[in-house]
Image (cartoon, rainbow, N blue to C red):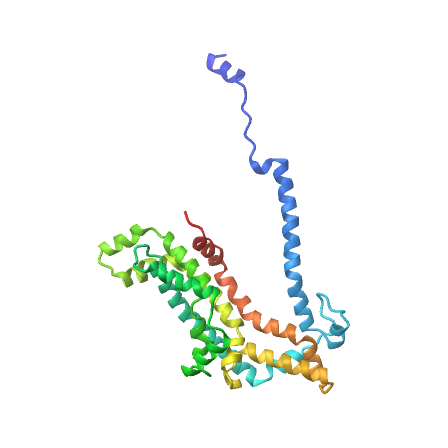
Length: 308
């Protein structure tokens, strides 16, 4: 036996270091974490399952409290009542137009304002930030706003919905923090190459901001889609209402007819599950759109909120 062979024979073997996921404590942690997260998912999904079941159940089972997560007495009368009305589809189209237009305008204005505020060498930057933050805590009030919108001739138009809510200050500050986190060297290099401020914003900053812009699109779209009070306040003609106002009026009409005892069978059924049907019809489009931008959502919020 050679010297090298004898050394290898008597050399103590080294134990392979245990990975963190091999330890018993980590396995227990994973099991407990899985149980807790499963419970959170169940608690989160239960209200949605209950709403779907109520929207498909018969009036008698709903009023007696027998509907849980499984529909009882399968009934689609409320869906037929709502979706057979041509005004429903007119108002639904209005909601899509209002949401798309308002979201595009809000994204453009918020992006431009946030990019300006992100420049630390901008003169008057503190005053501009202060003006924006001031509006988070103070407003002119309901009646002055109504008088202003009316005097500007915006009543019964899409601009009464779009312009007063075009910039959300919270979204503005998140985008400002994101722009501040971008390397200034990129903009300096672009300026050396001959790009002006608008060129830098369009060709350098915007392509690097897809995550935060997608997040802001989601925030604004959900806000405008669910908004009903602004249209209820500034619009008098039913053909201009968004679908949220239509469904609000339907709830009020069905509830009033039931309370006075003058409702038909269809209205009684509608009054029993109109709230559930309303939630399903208004939330469904957002649920369908959300998966396509969900991958940008978490990264956009983190990039806009964490610095350093």
